[in-house]
Image 1 (cartoon, helix red, strand yellow):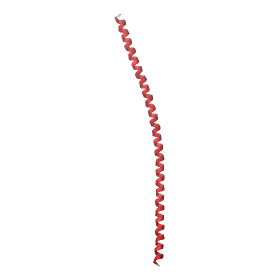
Image 2 (cartoon, one colour):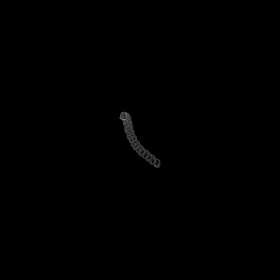
Image 3 (cartoon, one colour):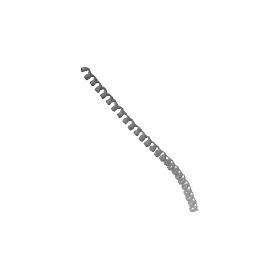
Image 4 (tube, one colour):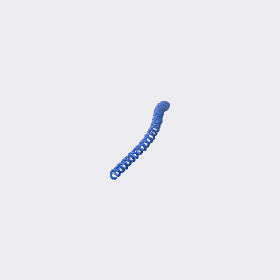
Length: 94
């Protein structure tokens, strides 16, 4: 009878080990699924951030161009005003 009890105990222990292993495999599968979902979410977030960066870069380039155009316009207006003031001074000197 002792050998039957030992065999039963070994079987129960083996079945318990298998159940434990099975639980670990299922947990690993769940962790893998979660990791894949997190990776997909991170990739989507990265793509969104890149699109935003691209849009902001394009907007910054546009603002720089507008600023440069305004600086050139200001310089042209300054030259015209200085020329007009010079003509007014020459008329007043006469």
